[in-house]
View 1 (cartoon, rainbow, N blue to C red):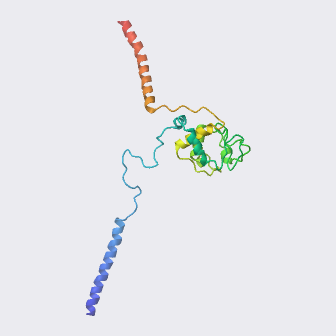
View 2: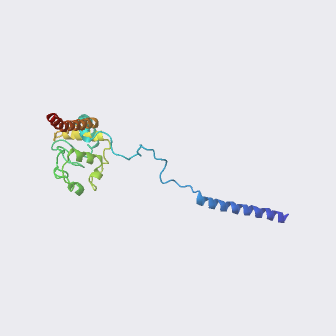
Length: 208
């Protein structure tokens, strides 16, 4: 009986070795790894985060900005900034008459970061929009800890309101609508074609 038990145990051990070997070999050919790119690309559909901002541009947003809404957005800034004429600097500089002012200059001797002082230029509408979207992207190394305003309309409303606080620069006109611009280009092309055809027609008539 002992021999029979040993035989059965030997076959069981052999079968286990075969199974283990098969598992090792199959794992070499059928391994379960996360694919480098998940799913399938669908033509005409952009992945999240790809592509540019397809919304209205800054000029259009400023032309239709809600100044009262911009004042409400400024509540997020009021902990660090004053905006009244002659107001004291706080954690951040007083922002009266900031729109159009030189970047990183003035403001009653406020200690601007070297990153902002060396930026150059002025606080144009475009620069303010970029700054408010991401201060650290606009001036890497800035002391400004505010992460930024991701909503373009909020930024435009805030800029329009800041502009009323001692700057009062004329706001830009809205960008032309794409369809209107295409129509204007087509009309110009048609006018140009008519202008070139007219002399040719006159010449033909004169020769008859």
